Amino acid sequence: AQSVAQPEDQVNVAEGNPLTVKCTYSVSGNPYLFWYVQYPNRGLQFLLKYITGDNLVKGSYGFEAEFNKSQTSFHLKKPSALVSDSALYFCAVTGPSGNTGKLIFGQGTTLQVKP
Amino acid sequence: DAGVIQSPRHEVTEMGQEVTLRCKPISGHDYLFWYRQTMMRGLELLIYFNNNVPIDDSGMPEDRFSAKMPNASFSTLKIQPSEPRDSAVYFCASSLAGGGYGYTFGSGTRLTVV
Image 1 (tube, rainbow over the protein chains, first blue to last red):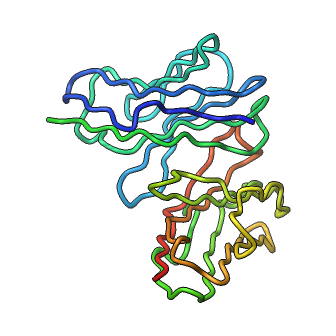
Image 2 (cartoon, rainbow over the protein chains, first blue to last red; image 1 turned 90 degrees about the vertical axis):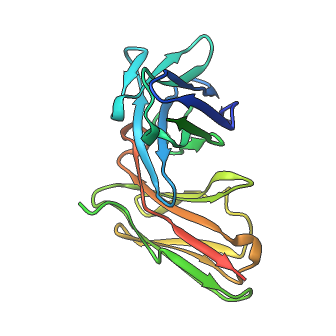
């Protein structure tokens, strides 16, 4: 069965510094990978996805993620964090072989950006 | 499009009562998902439908939970009887052609069972 792990419950970073939110996955075949963000009392908003092609995927709000098949990772990154980036971030995966419909989420990582 | 619409936004009910949560997916989307979010268990997939047919209900916690999708524009999640441990935020999401095109989430229903 596919699974997603986000090893950090919380990531703290100063405004203007680069940020990384980690995600590893376990899926046989070729997964589709996603990042979502959740602001307080809101639903989940799509940030970016990897299906195939370039390992570096660019998404909304200046975020990007790097797919690494050998390390089964899909870490979320941003070169310069903003206070407004503070939110709960979820990594998610479908699979195996992508388009099965079922999206499984990691446990979430709280990003706290301090001014 | 107005996105995925869930109602009600908040529901407070007494233990033992029946609760019905509603969802209207994005028009044209052929997959619909129900998730539950709690602090302890995070986001759990309860059930999902493809073309109005339930595909996987292995995440439904017990027989007190049931979900229906009578047509392409409406789905319900029912809890009968409700218990305090059912208190959570319930999200509905829809997508086109499964995972590859992304999922759009509703704003959720915050359920409190007292």
